[in-house]
Each structure stands twice: as structure tokens, then as C-alpha cells.
Amino acid sequence: MALLQILTYPDPRLREKAQPVDAVDAQLRQFIDDMAQTMYAAKGIGLAATQVGVAKRVVVIDLSAERDRLQVLINPRIVARDGVQVCEEGCLSVPDVFEEVERAERVTVSYLDRDGQAQQMDADGLLAVCVQHEIDHLDGKLFVDYLSRLKQDRLRKKAGKRQREETRV
Ligand code: NI
Image (cartoon, rainbow, N blue to C red; front, side, top):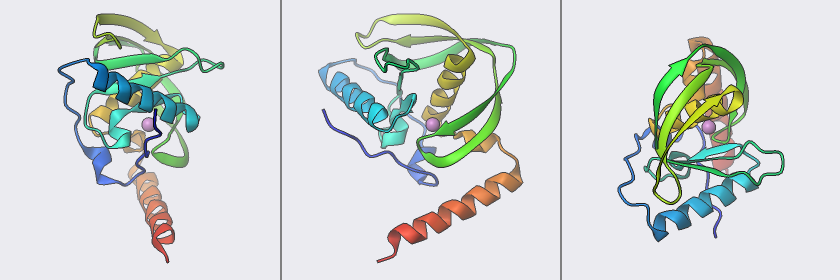
């Protein structure tokens, strides 16, 4: 297994729309293992392939305290949504930013599992938030896109400053 590099805002690759996976094979499972390892190492609860620069519709999620309940969603699609909830979100690709975002309270998501089997899952609460956040990543969307124009301007300035500092030699 290998750790993958997590792209950070405003990297343009985070804006790419990911393509559906057409074969769940050994190579894909290797990539999924790398994604999981990368998510655990970064102490995240979810990671989308887009965030590691791979434009494929793959998501890993683990909300368990013990970090032993990995959920793999390949080609995830929300087929039903209901209700409204507001949750404070963060993102491994937008370090140090936590903001409230409004999302559906419950979603039903269809996907392929690690073995390529079609599955359907009902999610609510934090899992529903996570599923919506990660599928947004696959569509090139970030949680900060939901914030006010003013807050987005501030974030862009902050990210630009951070980038300049990182490239200083
Ligand atoms: Ni994220």
C-alpha cells in the first residue's frame, strides 16, 4: 500500500468531474486500499478519488471511532433525498476551514461495493452529510462553494497566501 498526495484548494484538479468506473478489478482494489490508508493517515472520515488527483468515481468513508468500518462506494449515485440538516463540515482538501453547510437529512445512495456488487444504502445524519460531501468532490464541487461570496473571497486570499509561503525558497 502507498500513501497518496491529497490535493488542496485551490488546485484546479479538484474541479474535474470524475468518470464512472467500468471495471472493478485488482488494480482498482489496490487503489482503494491506497485511498483508505491515505484517509486514515490524514485522520479523515471520507476521501474521494478526485482529492488524490484520480478522476474516477470512487469514495471511501469510515465514521467509526475504531477506524475499522471502511465503506467503499464506487459510482455512487443519490437516488432519493429528504429533509434538511445543517452540519459543520471540514475537508482534507481545505485545511483548517470549518463551516456550516445545509444538506439533505437523509439520502438513499446506490453504488457498487469493493467486489463490484450493486448495493443500495439509506444514510442519515453524519453519514448522509459525508456521502453528499464526497459525491460533490466527484463532480468537482467543494463544500466552500456553498458559503457566501464574502467568505469564499476570504478563503481564496488565505489559500493564495499559504501557497506563496509554501513556494518561497
Ligand atoms: Ni472533502
